[in-house]
Length: 78
Image (cartoon, rainbow, N blue to C red; front, side):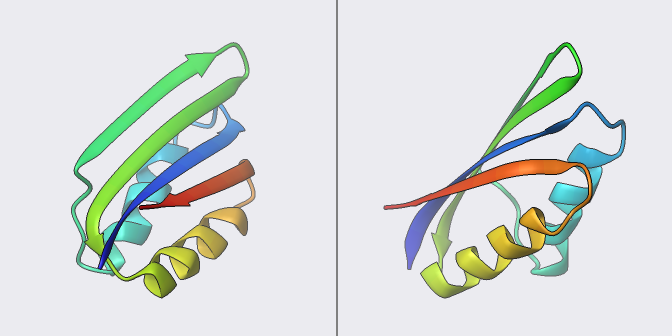
């Protein structure tokens, strides 16, 4: 198991944060931390999860990337 950090950039859509957290809920995961910041028309979100399988983290990242309002997802595994 590893720790994963997702750095997401997307449009400042009111539903984006809920949709991203919904992906984790589908996996029965609760994030250790969530930081969201709006900068004009953009939303910057950081999500950290400890004790996740690296393959599972990559699957979640790919699902995040497929969302319409998401522009960029960077994943860091420790």
